[in-house]
Image 1 (cartoon, rainbow over the protein chains, first blue to last red):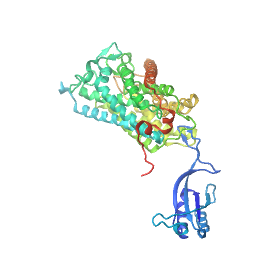
Image 2: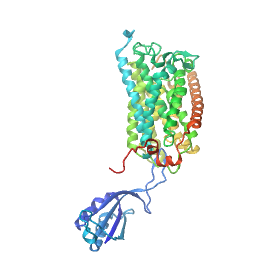
Image 3: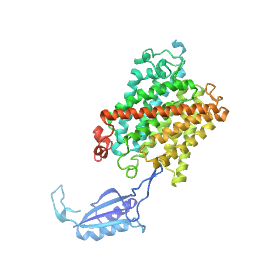
Image 4: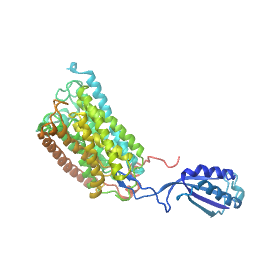
Length: 113
Length: 413
């Protein structure tokens, strides 16, 4: 089992969700976050005082999958989020120790999805 | 005596009083939107608390100190304390065609909003108890005397011939200088100037500014104390000056910061309203444009350049906007006042009377010195008795939680 975290541009979210759905990956958690990469953010000005903080709005997607879904998930996110510009985002893949479905108490692989 | 009451005048001044009252909650949202989310309620609370405290002070003795029978040209007596004799019968000295109580309640709203203006300078760091005590003292020992000098029969600045239609000296310079002094006495917020987060809700600030603009028609238009041509003239120039100043600030932002900003535009509009306040009953509509343009230039310079250079933490630019806008407006009255607009006024420099400008300058200086010195003394006294500033820990957590045990916005349902 893997835990996949992707940070993407907010306006790519709908595309990414559609592509995940096409590959029958339903379990998704989405959060609105602030972040930055090498591209930095857009500096803001309030009454002529420039703000040092330079974070941009991003969307974080979290997906827990069994091994056979790792590749399709990464493909779906990449295809949905890629524009070819800097700032398209990153995908992180982590090992997942366990998963519990709260309603039934099922654990491990059967609990995902 | 009640036969003298004019129903149109009375209706307009009662409505104006309500319009001016609305400016205090409007200011609360203007200021509230500009602070960090952890201090939102503290600003709203301070504004509403002032409305309550100063209204009671005004009814019990403040109105009498301000407008009561003159003592040596410096203060009113206690003759009208508890609003004794302030009823339906007009007082011809101030407004011959409306009930005395109507004049009193209209003026009450000015007494409320003036101290409220100051709080933007020390936002996000003052103890609430100390705030309440300071504001009661400031209303009684600074606002009431200055109001008496400028507007009451017998007041010495009024006797000098200084013109202040709706409160350039009494309200804006008075509050603006008190703001600068309190920013200096309380000191900076932690992290100022580099590590202070930007305004937490600019749409609320814009809503507040819009409501201020709306209420200002009562502030200036109502100061004619009648429903007549002068009220209309004041209404018109108020609107024109605000528009000119809002546009000017946006253009200055565009030129010097590459982009016009929402915050800049509403700051400019409010500055323009400040500047036209003393002039509104004395200047014509085309001159109001110059007052608006000049005001944004002066205030922009103080907010963008002077504050950065000297590094005082006037958190919401009360000095830069109200103090300097008020000073510009008082002097501009001495430049563009015109007897064709108001025969009871005077001509300014551009209408052949340089003397008025000197009188205006004297009125400004007296207000600046008195407000500055008294604010400093009152703050020091309150600081010695109970301490002004919250602890560093409380400042970090925010005033909403530490002073009021409330949160403006819940994070979860």
